[in-house]
Amino acid sequence: MHRTGKITLGYGSGGELYHKLVTKFFLPAFSNPYLDQLSDAALCPAGNSRIALTSDSFVVKPRFFPGGDIGRLAVCGTVNDLAMSGARPLYLTSALIIESGFPLLELELIVKSMAQAAAEAVVLIVGGDTKVVDQGACDGLFITTAGVGIYELDRELGPQLALPGDQIIVSGEIADHGMAVIAARHQLDFNPPLTSDVAPLAGLAAAALAVPPALR
Image (cartoon, rainbow, N blue to C red; front, side):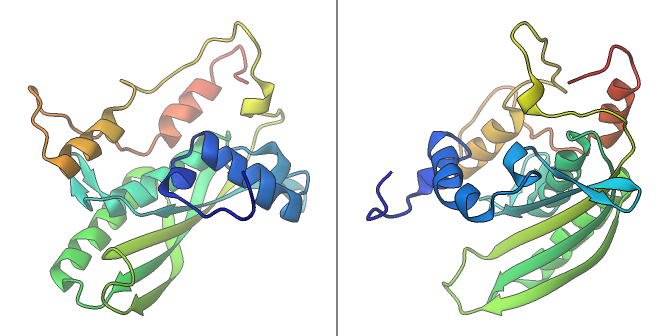
Protein backbone atom coordinates (compact mmCIF):
# COMPACT_ATOMS: atom_id res chain seq x y z
CA MET A 1 0.00 0.00 0.00
CA HIS A 2 1.47 3.33 -1.10
CA ARG A 3 0.30 6.54 0.57
CA THR A 4 0.20 8.18 -2.86
CA GLY A 5 -2.55 5.77 -3.89
CA LYS A 6 -6.31 6.12 -3.56
CA ILE A 7 -9.10 4.27 -1.78
CA THR A 8 -10.94 1.69 -3.88
CA LEU A 9 -14.09 -0.30 -3.11
CA GLY A 10 -11.94 -3.25 -2.10
CA TYR A 11 -10.75 -1.40 1.00
CA GLY A 12 -14.24 -1.66 2.46
CA SER A 13 -14.72 -5.36 1.80
CA GLY A 14 -13.48 -6.61 5.17
CA GLY A 15 -10.75 -8.64 3.47
CA GLU A 16 -7.00 -8.26 2.96
CA LEU A 17 -7.13 -4.67 1.69
CA TYR A 18 -9.31 -3.64 4.63
CA HIS A 19 -6.82 -5.23 7.04
CA LYS A 20 -3.95 -3.34 5.41
CA LEU A 21 -5.88 -0.07 5.70
CA VAL A 22 -6.51 -0.62 9.41
CA THR A 23 -2.97 -1.69 10.26
CA LYS A 24 -1.20 1.04 8.26
CA PHE A 25 -3.40 4.03 9.07
CA PHE A 26 -5.77 3.55 12.01
CA LEU A 27 -3.78 1.34 14.39
CA PRO A 28 -0.65 3.54 14.37
CA ALA A 29 -2.77 6.66 14.95
CA PHE A 30 -5.11 5.33 17.64
CA SER A 31 -3.16 2.43 19.17
CA ASN A 32 -4.19 1.42 22.70
CA PRO A 33 -4.66 -1.91 24.51
CA TYR A 34 -8.39 -2.08 23.75
CA LEU A 35 -8.21 -1.24 20.05
CA ASP A 36 -5.14 -3.36 19.38
CA GLN A 37 -7.11 -6.58 20.05
CA LEU A 38 -9.04 -5.93 16.80
CA SER A 39 -12.07 -7.76 18.18
CA ASP A 40 -15.70 -7.28 17.15
CA ALA A 41 -16.14 -5.02 20.19
CA ALA A 42 -13.67 -3.27 22.48
CA LEU A 43 -13.75 -4.47 26.09
CA CYS A 44 -13.13 -1.42 28.30
CA PRO A 45 -13.05 -0.96 32.09
CA ALA A 46 -15.95 1.00 33.57
CA GLY A 47 -15.80 1.34 37.34
CA ASN A 48 -15.75 -2.14 38.86
CA SER A 49 -16.95 -3.86 35.69
CA ARG A 50 -16.26 -3.89 31.96
CA ILE A 51 -18.31 -2.73 29.01
CA ALA A 52 -18.18 -3.80 25.39
CA LEU A 53 -18.31 -0.98 22.85
CA THR A 54 -18.72 -1.28 19.09
CA SER A 55 -19.63 0.83 16.08
CA ASP A 56 -20.56 -0.05 12.52
CA SER A 57 -21.81 1.51 9.29
CA PHE A 58 -24.28 0.02 6.82
CA VAL A 59 -24.44 0.89 3.13
CA VAL A 60 -26.07 -2.27 1.73
CA LYS A 61 -27.58 -2.23 -1.75
CA PRO A 62 -30.40 -2.98 -2.33
CA ARG A 63 -31.79 -1.63 0.94
CA PHE A 64 -34.51 -4.32 0.95
CA PHE A 65 -33.53 -7.92 0.25
CA PRO A 66 -35.12 -11.34 0.89
CA GLY A 67 -35.09 -11.87 4.64
CA GLY A 68 -34.32 -8.33 5.74
CA ASP A 69 -33.39 -4.74 5.00
CA ILE A 70 -30.73 -2.19 5.89
CA GLY A 71 -32.49 -1.30 9.17
CA ARG A 72 -32.70 -4.86 10.45
CA LEU A 73 -29.13 -5.46 9.33
CA ALA A 74 -27.89 -2.39 11.23
CA VAL A 75 -29.43 -3.46 14.52
CA CYS A 76 -28.56 -7.15 14.23
CA GLY A 77 -25.02 -6.48 13.05
CA THR A 78 -24.32 -4.22 16.02
CA VAL A 79 -25.94 -6.54 18.54
CA ASN A 80 -24.00 -9.49 17.17
CA ASP A 81 -20.66 -7.68 17.38
CA LEU A 82 -21.32 -7.22 21.10
CA ALA A 83 -22.57 -10.78 21.56
CA MET A 84 -19.58 -12.33 19.76
CA SER A 85 -17.28 -10.58 22.22
CA GLY A 86 -19.09 -12.34 25.07
CA ALA A 87 -21.02 -9.26 26.21
CA ARG A 88 -24.74 -8.86 26.92
CA PRO A 89 -26.00 -6.16 24.53
CA LEU A 90 -27.94 -3.35 26.21
CA TYR A 91 -28.09 -0.07 24.26
CA LEU A 92 -27.69 1.17 20.71
CA THR A 93 -27.50 4.55 19.04
CA SER A 94 -28.23 5.12 15.37
CA ALA A 95 -27.23 7.91 13.00
CA LEU A 96 -28.88 8.20 9.58
CA ILE A 97 -27.49 10.05 6.56
CA ILE A 98 -30.42 10.52 4.19
CA GLU A 99 -30.29 11.77 0.63
CA SER A 100 -32.64 14.59 -0.29
CA GLY A 101 -35.67 13.17 -2.09
CA PHE A 102 -35.63 9.87 -0.19
CA PRO A 103 -39.20 8.46 0.09
CA LEU A 104 -40.71 8.92 3.55
CA LEU A 105 -42.67 5.67 3.22
CA GLU A 106 -39.44 3.73 2.71
CA LEU A 107 -37.87 5.49 5.69
CA GLU A 108 -40.86 4.53 7.84
CA LEU A 109 -40.53 0.87 6.85
CA ILE A 110 -36.82 0.84 7.67
CA VAL A 111 -37.32 2.52 11.05
CA LYS A 112 -40.08 0.04 11.95
CA SER A 113 -37.78 -2.81 10.96
CA MET A 114 -35.06 -1.42 13.25
CA ALA A 115 -37.54 -1.23 16.12
CA GLN A 116 -38.68 -4.82 15.55
CA ALA A 117 -35.09 -6.12 15.45
CA ALA A 118 -34.25 -4.22 18.65
CA ALA A 119 -37.26 -5.78 20.37
CA GLU A 120 -36.13 -9.26 19.28
CA ALA A 121 -32.65 -8.58 20.60
CA VAL A 122 -33.99 -7.08 23.86
CA VAL A 123 -31.98 -3.87 23.43
CA LEU A 124 -33.00 -0.22 23.44
CA ILE A 125 -32.17 2.38 20.80
CA VAL A 126 -31.47 5.28 23.15
CA GLY A 127 -30.16 8.01 20.87
CA GLY A 128 -29.13 8.98 17.40
CA ASP A 129 -28.69 11.67 14.79
CA THR A 130 -30.11 12.52 11.38
CA LYS A 131 -28.40 14.38 8.56
CA VAL A 132 -29.83 15.16 5.12
CA VAL A 133 -27.41 15.62 2.21
CA ASP A 134 -27.86 16.88 -1.34
CA GLN A 135 -29.35 14.59 -3.93
CA GLY A 136 -26.57 12.42 -5.32
CA ALA A 137 -24.30 12.92 -2.30
CA CYS A 138 -25.03 9.43 -0.93
CA ASP A 139 -26.72 6.29 -2.15
CA GLY A 140 -30.13 6.99 -0.64
CA LEU A 141 -29.53 6.07 2.99
CA PHE A 142 -26.51 5.22 5.14
CA ILE A 143 -26.86 4.04 8.76
CA THR A 144 -24.13 4.22 11.41
CA THR A 145 -24.66 2.54 14.77
CA ALA A 146 -22.93 2.27 18.11
CA GLY A 147 -23.62 -0.40 20.69
CA VAL A 148 -22.85 -0.88 24.37
CA GLY A 149 -23.04 -4.10 26.35
CA ILE A 150 -22.01 -5.33 29.77
CA TYR A 151 -19.26 -7.91 30.04
CA GLU A 152 -20.16 -10.29 32.83
CA LEU A 153 -17.57 -13.02 32.23
CA ASP A 154 -14.44 -13.48 34.32
CA ARG A 155 -12.39 -14.61 31.32
CA GLU A 156 -11.18 -13.29 28.00
CA LEU A 157 -12.63 -14.02 24.58
CA GLY A 158 -11.39 -13.00 21.17
CA PRO A 159 -9.99 -14.14 17.83
CA GLN A 160 -6.44 -13.58 19.12
CA LEU A 161 -6.96 -16.54 21.48
CA ALA A 162 -7.76 -19.07 18.75
CA LEU A 163 -5.41 -22.07 18.61
CA PRO A 164 -4.66 -24.67 15.94
CA GLY A 165 -7.11 -27.55 16.30
CA ASP A 166 -9.91 -25.45 17.77
CA GLN A 167 -13.41 -26.16 16.49
CA ILE A 168 -15.47 -23.31 15.02
CA ILE A 169 -19.16 -22.96 15.85
CA VAL A 170 -21.34 -21.28 13.25
CA SER A 171 -24.97 -20.26 13.64
CA GLY A 172 -26.16 -21.63 10.30
CA GLU A 173 -25.22 -22.04 6.66
CA ILE A 174 -22.22 -19.89 5.71
CA ALA A 175 -22.79 -16.94 3.30
CA ASP A 176 -26.61 -17.01 3.22
CA HIS A 177 -26.82 -13.27 3.87
CA GLY A 178 -24.10 -12.19 1.45
CA MET A 179 -25.39 -14.34 -1.37
CA ALA A 180 -29.00 -13.24 -0.80
CA VAL A 181 -27.95 -9.59 -1.10
CA ILE A 182 -25.84 -10.24 -4.22
CA ALA A 183 -28.69 -12.18 -5.81
CA ALA A 184 -31.12 -9.33 -5.12
CA ARG A 185 -28.63 -6.72 -6.38
CA HIS A 186 -28.02 -8.49 -9.67
CA GLN A 187 -31.50 -10.04 -10.01
CA LEU A 188 -30.18 -13.59 -10.00
CA ASP A 189 -32.63 -16.48 -9.80
CA PHE A 190 -31.95 -19.45 -7.53
CA ASN A 191 -34.15 -22.46 -6.82
CA PRO A 192 -34.94 -22.47 -3.98
CA PRO A 193 -34.64 -18.68 -3.59
CA LEU A 194 -31.85 -17.38 -1.35
CA THR A 195 -32.92 -15.66 1.86
CA SER A 196 -30.75 -13.68 4.27
CA ASP A 197 -30.43 -15.20 7.75
CA VAL A 198 -29.86 -11.82 9.42
CA ALA A 199 -30.96 -12.13 13.07
CA PRO A 200 -29.82 -11.08 16.55
CA LEU A 201 -27.63 -13.83 18.03
CA ALA A 202 -27.16 -12.61 21.62
CA GLY A 203 -29.39 -15.36 23.06
CA LEU A 204 -27.61 -18.05 21.07
CA ALA A 205 -24.21 -16.73 22.14
CA ALA A 206 -25.24 -16.63 25.80
CA ALA A 207 -26.43 -20.24 25.62
CA ALA A 208 -23.12 -21.33 24.06
CA LEU A 209 -21.11 -19.48 26.71
CA ALA A 210 -23.07 -21.21 29.46
CA VAL A 211 -21.92 -24.68 28.33
CA PRO A 212 -18.48 -25.83 29.51
CA PRO A 213 -15.74 -26.06 28.46
CA ALA A 214 -15.30 -22.33 28.01
CA LEU A 215 -15.18 -20.94 24.51
CA ARG A 216 -12.22 -18.91 23.36
